[in-house]
Amino acid sequence: MVSGTFRVPKAHTFSIVARDQVSGDLGVAVQSHWFGVGAAVTWAAAGVGVVATQASIDPGYGPRGLDLMRQKISAPEALARLLAKDVVQDMRQVAMVDAAGNVAVHTGTQCVAFAGHAGGDGFSCQGNIMANPEVWTAMATAFEFGRGELADRLLMALEAGQAAGGDARGRQSAAMLVVAAEAEPETWQGVLVDLRVDDHPEPILELRRLLHVHRAFRHMNRGDEQLAEGDVAAALESYRTAATLVPHMAELSFWHAVALAGLGRMDEAQPLFRSVFEQEPVWAEIVQRLPAAGLLPHDVDLIRRILAS
Image (cartoon, rainbow, N blue to C red; front, side, top):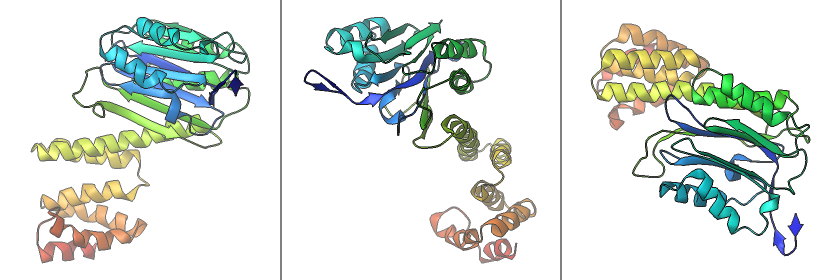
């Protein structure tokens, strides 16, 4: 797209930026008929804020907006400062929420219809090239009255936007980014959810599937932490939960079995190993590498018992 001497990329889409009123976590989610929309539209930093930059997109609104909010500049002031320097602001659609829940949103007058935004306390929903002007309102209603974790409510908003008509061109990609309420010393810390669907016929449905898998691995990672802390009972429960959530993923059951074997609980481990080896025989070879990596004892009899499974 060309405007005067300016050439700007496109990310016509619908999105939501929000702060959870209970946890204080911050999130942004998006769907578009455009490849890899999450790479340019969604921006977030723990304890700082979230940004969605779309329409005739300037990705710089993301890092620059976060830099300003990191300096304790409110989202409305941060967005106002960036727009003041943007000679093609009429072609932009940008939304921000800061760590205090302040909301700022801009829909330029030259955004392709239907374009607009709606929001409430601590959140904003926006879209351009929508099938109708009801999309962003439907999203706002779904988020406001939704229940569950922030990630669930962000998905509800996307689903409501799609149900109301969504992108007039169809659908292709989606993304979600959720960060913690508290700031972290490093920019990569505090990321709770970071999911992208770059090319899929049902991107929101795929995003929901990935969120389910993400939660299984979150339990698995927590189990590793609990085991390192010496809380064996809690760790094994986390491993069980992870494997139950995605029973078709043999690797989660494998590491659960490894933990049991390392604790000397082979009666519980053997059925898990047997199931894993039946699903994916390669794990029988991998288990033999674990003693050298310190993940199982150097015990020939133990390895023999595992392989006998």
